[in-house]
Length: 233
Image 1 (spheres, helix red, strand yellow):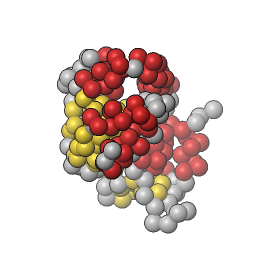
Image 2 (cartoon, one colour; image 1 turned 180 degrees about the vertical axis):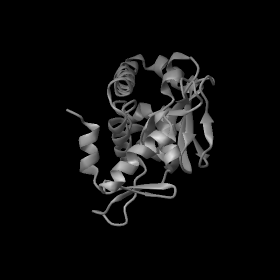
Image 3 (cartoon, one colour; image 1 turned 60 degrees about the vertical axis):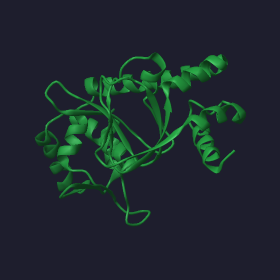
């Protein structure tokens, strides 16, 4: 086994979809996997495209989302290193249900649908592990719908900023404030709402020191306060 194949196997083994597969079997997929590099803002696939591959993020960050009826972007999730995406269309043979865009230069492992389905046909018991992954996707979709229906704009915005803290946030020192290098327009696009609505909430939060607004970035000074907004009584 080459060092490259071993590294790919180890990466696949850390994902929920493949974690329970014995290493000897996982080598079958690791050999088939291909490395892909995408640049910042590069669109990997769009809603409606054929679902011919699933991907594992090795480095970087991938945004999953769609365009709203009004032409605004709505973010479903940010896929971090060690996480899979694109598996639903691969498993059911349908088209992509969302867009996938690189938020930064990223390195991915790609598995062709034919290789994944052939593997499951040879080892059908492994298909049971897919149920857990797919159920998790359904739960996430339910949570997103619940947020849109029941949460106020400040609650949705706070929840999204905390998610960005975990995916894009940077600190000058371990206990310092978190800086998210996205514009207010980009954050508004993620939520499918207007920039003016986002700015209205952020400006109020800046007045009380919860955030600091800068050009192309938002600094989170008091994440505890955001957590209170994100979890209303």
